[in-house]
Image 1 (tube, rainbow, N blue to C red):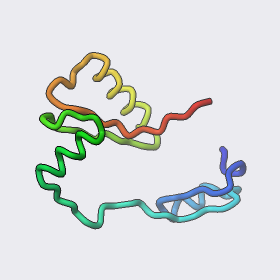
Image 2: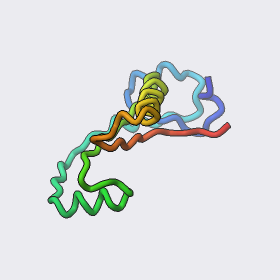
Image 3: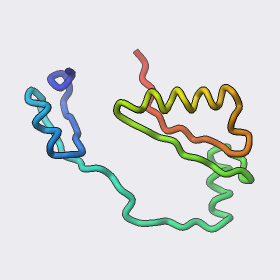
Length: 100
């Protein structure tokens, strides 16, 4: 719908190009994956948790989603936080919030 109104559209799969016939410019970026596994020692883990204001003694769960499932995921995590269901762990929610 907005493909004609943007400067660039980035796609993960070549097949998506056919679905955007009126796009101004399309760039195939691919789907990012982790290429190098980074193993942190205990002091590095504690320092990172403290840097982000997290409790070093509790485990952290990173939650992220995209496309059509993002709203459902974000709403579910926000409801969990509202009900304080995460007492034994911490949640980092990676979400894109937009202002209209």
